[in-house]
Image 1 (cartoon, rainbow, N blue to C red):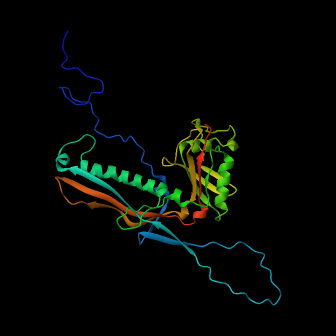
Image 2 (image 1 turned 135 degrees about the vertical axis):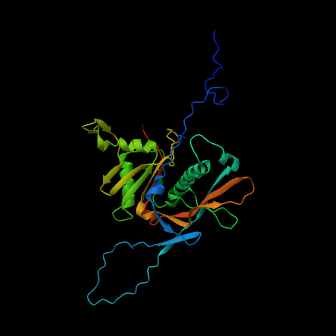
Image 3 (image 1 turned 90 degrees about the vertical axis):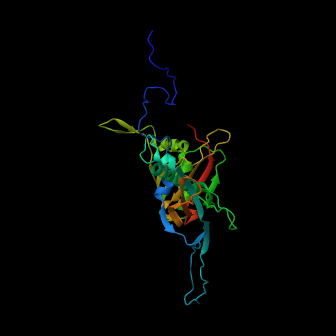
Length: 309
């Protein structure tokens, strides 16, 4: 029986032998890169590591009746309150040896630029996580500073649902809480895939599914909800908790008004060259920012929810 030169093992990729490898000259990303909170929120400038803004409430409405010829009463100045969030430094290193930069690589003609592009996405993903979930910390200059992310800024309307089942009623009640604390809320809802499937199955939709006539595409996606208390854009977020066990569920969702949310930059994202200590090019992707969240009372956070799927 003739010999064909070499034996191939399934999964082998060392490139040994005479035959050429069939390797595509491209790189396919395996993980999602979406950063929806980063993308929909605005930007402003911070001028100190402790970024502050002012809020002021309105006294409860009163009957305000007076006698004819009444004497004027004095009124103290209504002083606003200060709210503080801490600027956080995020860094993502990039390093490629000079040898590697001179070699040829599949999928890129410039490995240095490829790594900068790749780790820029990593840096942005870390920023998204911090803006949503970090917990404020810091103090002395030798301590790492961390901002309060969206979820940890909500206190007035943060509620542990104690394993309650997610429902349309729960959702509407959450929107009402926001409406109680701000005029004409235009809300964004961030939730995981379990909560999103619950939204798509709201009872008010019954069994009806919209169908595009020409292509017969079935549309089963609730991306906007108009309620009596405001309209809500619904977003999937991979950074929200996603545990749907019956005994200890950790599904959660947050409602907020994007007009209140800003990324406050003390130092905009930039590439900082690093000192050379080896035969390699090195730089650091750096940002310093915090979350300015405006009216905390207008945001809502529900957690520990079970979703019946």
